[in-house]
Image (tube, rainbow, N blue to C red; front, side):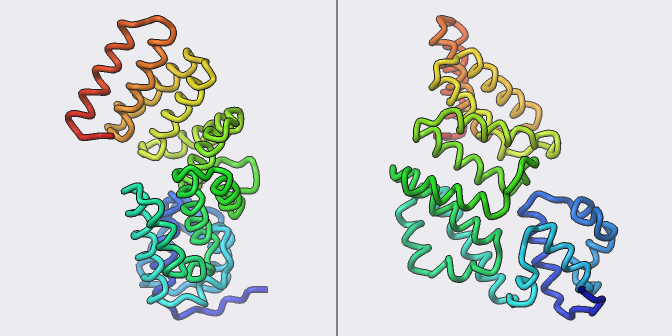
Length: 279
């Protein structure tokens, strides 16, 4: 049984805040069933020590091994933060071969072994890189395994899992399994009501749903989801993927013979690309 021993590590609060933010949780959501929100705030700021019992409950809520809070020092935490930043940069630039080489050269998987979340991030990024390099047969199993590290049931996915699920759905689509692709994307949309403030992680979900229905020649459903995505962008002032949503909407209108609506959507898509350099 975990006792009330006080742990004298101020950097634990920094790590708790980092993981909470990455998982899309508020302080109030993390505190639910553990303590009160103000106590989580004080722990994260390092002005209050955290008891072993509360730390155990926080680790359980994060689906992490509690040893992560004992085995990692501040230098290791900064190292992982730097690794994540570099990997995300390479992903954003579509430098997938360089991303795989970076993971190998810097022994990233060994460094990130402490945390399930860090393991998931690296494994998903490797799988996604392989998918984008055209080796779906190698990438898909990696992304599947990455998701299984934290997602084991029918619950609504956490914010940090949505990115992994999106990559998984894209891989299924490229593999021709549209049923699995569409099913996983719908799991992501179930989380919309939780993140009501608007999040640009959801705009690709609308786009890939529209594209998947379009690829299966269900053009009216494709239009429905593209339109929902456009409306979501407008309501939350998000421009991410907006040009692609308009293009996908136009393509589906064109396939059902509604040329005027198709041209309107194409024109908006082109205008957005010209204004913001979106590709």
